[in-house]
Length: 99
Image 1 (cartoon, rainbow, N blue to C red):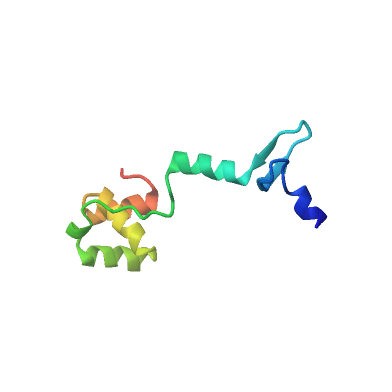
Image 2: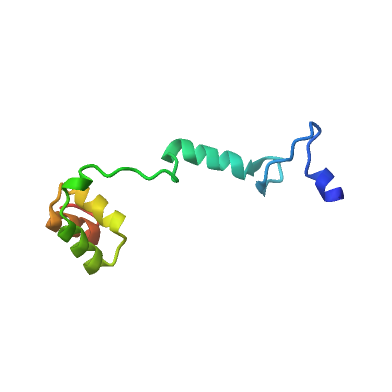
């Protein structure tokens, strides 16, 4: 019971989950870090629609998935960024650059 009381602030709300406490009194809370990260990167739970996904050839997607053993969504994204060019998509996935 003492732990429950210690976890509450004076106003009755539970204290934020603290990740790190520093000697000078500063602390970082998980909720604040997550909200800051979400504001910068966007909500990771939402799936983004890939541009021109219906224009990509199923055979090209299957080729990349089977050859590189990567998830279908990653193959679709690479093909979409390469505007449907299989060679460019493969080159980008393997080397990390489109050159």
